[in-house]
Image (cartoon, rainbow, N blue to C red; front, side):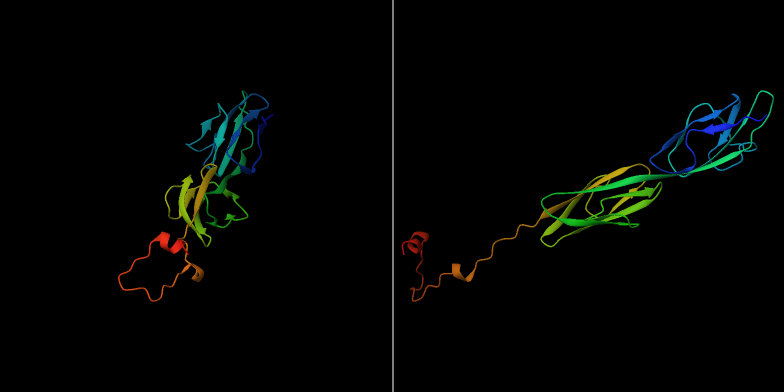
Length: 193
């Protein structure tokens, strides 16, 4: 009777990398590939000896052979891996951060999952009265921020409030009439009235 292999996690989509353990019910030798090729004939096949790390979209194929040379069927499992991008805003100012591909609109949505290998570009837009100053975390600099999603990433966008010089109102302007040419008025003179 052919051996049966049980994986520790079935195929599907996962957030974060996975470690897959393969167990044969008859203690047979397991062979596998992670490039989608046939593990019976492929030159890239490996003998299973330790859990398999899956960090990006991967098609895992495997089979087992027991001591009587009985072969199991080849099993194919495809694992899709997502990683989380988290944006934080800081500083005295305010603004929004958006992403391409869409998903981040921070503002309101500052966390998004992206498929492994996705390149995400973040753009910071300051509100009126603020300016964008710098990226930190997974990005640096002051331009657009491009993040490769090969792991969970955290990015901080810092905004600063613009301090504007005060503008004098009409009530603060003193109009002096009939002052002789060349005369000067000191602060104490103006206060004496």
